[in-house]
Image 1 (cartoon, rainbow, N blue to C red):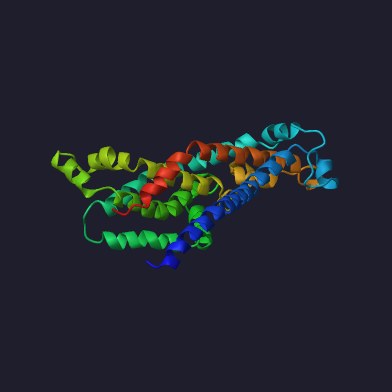
Image 2: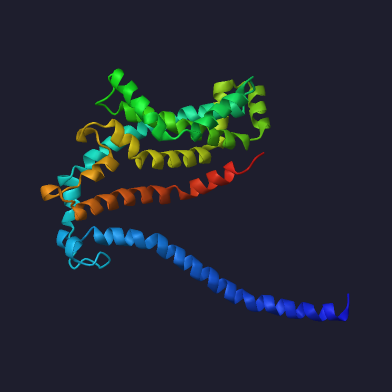
Length: 293
């Protein structure tokens, strides 16, 4: 080591120490900017839901409401049948989600844990299903539902959500099961457990965080869907919450902005509460799925 190199090291260490406060300030500013970008739209949505119709038409769209009009929420819940649309969404979402999770988890277990000929090809078929745009299958599905007499019910939504949600669910659950050591299933087999018991009592508990993660992802996909719902619901009585948000009209067909934003606030607030409640499970599930053991 030369004398010049030894003298340069303290100067380099001092430069690094002096750069740390600047780096921390930059990180704090970027974090603050991201928080503002995420929080301000929610604040604007809630504050705008308390405005009157005249404030929307004549006032500044970014100004705070002069006098909060809580009646917008009453108009959204009672006058616009918000709860009816929520009920339809639940009727379409809950069975679809249960079918997607049960069938997808079982298929992921079979394709990743069980050993049989052709499982790789079957997994590729499910992966191909992810690449098919949903818009391509709407017209054939509508014709099939019409011919089978399922139109006029919520069954087309349940069947379509289940079919379109399975490919991604199978792929993700196979990834989660891949992270489980094979010795665990071998030990359960030696102890006398059959395939179903190994799946239900060993496999599913070990990937439960992954199940919560996939379930929440699929729940958001199904709940926020508009294209499938508006295609297969032929009356306002069958409309889901996303379809119902299109029907917030006032006198002479004008948009009732206050009740509309109040309904959107209720919808977004409910989804945000669900996400915050399950946030830690999602993080653990994503971490578990990233391990390829």
